[in-house]
Image 1 (spheres, rainbow, N blue to C red):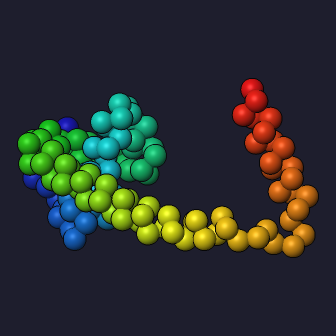
Image 2: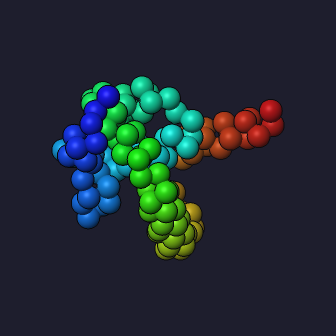
Length: 123
């Protein structure tokens, strides 16, 4: 188990928020996986963290749970607002693209795609 002093050296505050030192991985990224019931060893592998980094992150989260949860909720709200903005902004462009005629030479592949979509919906 890491000491609290070593743990705080591993977790630093950057412009992105609380981050694992030497990475771009935030504690909010780790919390997202924890809330999705991922086991710690899979999170560690997926985010390419060392065992020491993962232990330090988990220790920091356990020690500062309330403040981390508050910050995490703000991050989630901000991400949702960004997603809504970009979905609305891109909706117009996607509608424009859908109205465009198909590119010449793609008729065969488009017919094949439509046939597969029809077969999939009929199942």
